[in-house]
Length: 55
Image (tube, rainbow, N blue to C red):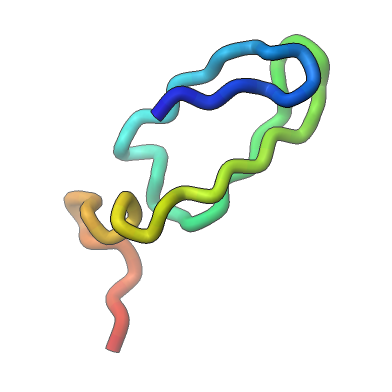
């Protein structure tokens, strides 16, 4: 998944193994803006570890 910083446009690539949570937040290396990404539910469920099981 390709993510862009809203402030400066820096491009980041999120690998599938990084998408274990529904919301990922990190600081842009260029402008220090807080980048927040909502990962689609199907991406979390389709992880090799299955994500957090729902009972």
